Amino acid sequence: MPETPRFLTLADVAELLNTSSAQVYALVRRGELPAIKLGGRGQWRIEASKLEEFIQQLYKDTEEFVSEHPFVDQESQD
Image 1 (cartoon, rainbow, N blue to C red):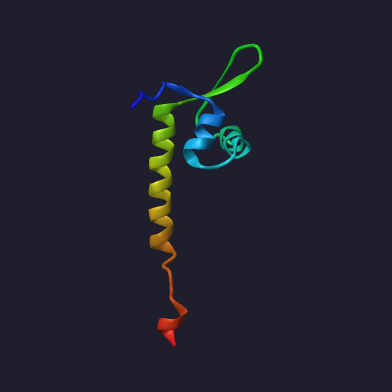
Image 2: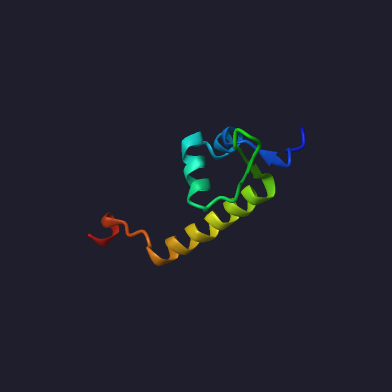
């Protein structure tokens, strides 16, 4: 299995997260996903370790959300 490169393009990240490049760009521009802009054309790159930290934070956020908003099955209440 090939080693993950240190820096990923927006398209790489979009593929890994199964979302669009536009969504990844929005995450970067809002400051939710740390990235660097390099070169004269301003190409965005996301460090693989930052992506992993971002994913772990999403898991924590989701766990918190679920605990604060329990799922209530309407059928079990009837």
